[in-house]
Image (cartoon, one colour):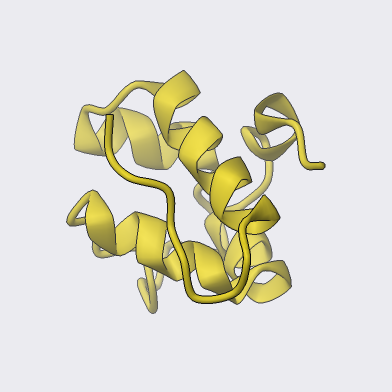
Length: 77
């Protein structure tokens, strides 16, 4: 099980490369992070702050997607 706090300082690219299923979470938040040129430099915290979403909620959804069966993303709260 992945802890949300362990994801916060990872770069967006690192998260997407390691767990491609997280792309659905970025898309659910209407984030343009997938394929973005700054993704290798921005952390999960940076993305949440730029898009004005709760770091804890966003990291939690990423962690849930990582731990979920392939192809499913957790619902938005």
